[in-house]
Amino acid sequence: MRIVTRPDFDGIICAVLLCEALDITEPTLWVEPNDVQKGRVDILNEDIIANLPYDERCALWFDHHFTNKIDKPFKGAFEIAPSAAGIIFEYYKDRFQRDYSELVQVADKIDSANLTLDEVLHPEKYPYVLVSLTVSNEARSNVPYWNTLVALFREKDIQQVLQNDEVKQHCQDVVYQNDRYVDVLKQHTIIKQHVALTDFRPFDRAPFGNRFLVYSLFPEASVNVRIRYEDQDKDMVVINLGHSIFNPGCNVNVGLMLAQFGGGGHPGAGSARVPSSKADDILSQIIDQLLGNKNNET
Image: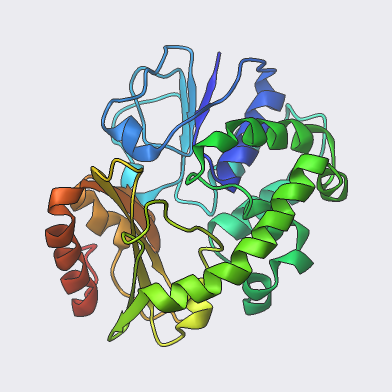
């Protein structure tokens, strides 16, 4: 039995809960949603998929993304909720030996982007927020670190987690990166009415940092579009969209919109991977829909 989840803070906590509830010892498989959608992940019949699209080969599935809802019977649980971790916590609530309620509340808060301006600007003052920012799918070499976090959160509280040398170093790196990321965002973001467009394609390796910083730097924007090459081959472009958490003026369900281009997500946040040759055309379509700012759920 193996956990298959995505490398974000919600995925980390999903793995913590599933390992505890089901006594799983096999290494977690960390994958991207698009890889599951495209059938590029070798899902086994005993796998437990969490925080990712459904695959009919799995044994159990837990998710909360708007665009991943299915109509066929399955084992597990799906609900539109702040986090997938919260769904797993409720599903296995009688199996936990430790009290994970605080950890799940934090997963709800972070995955639903329910953050204050001070938490965005000064994450070093907020331990859970800071640790969450050390988890990024843009650094594939961090698989051992993600596994370390799962092991730590199964046994320790947040203050003890922060004392781990590896976690401490990643947190220090995040604080340093965020200082640099402010300047990079200012240099590579343009405003089109209420849309902030951040283009990192000039970089061979895209910079990364606190994904919420852009909303504090461009308060007039109600939605951010961020584009980057997936890797150094530059064959694929990753498009990330997010409603501003400080300016709630975007009416477009971005997860539903990105489903048109092979992506998906939540009403307020989503992503898609597209061929580089088609990226500019798709980007133009996305921006036109965002500028129209119409509710697309009907």
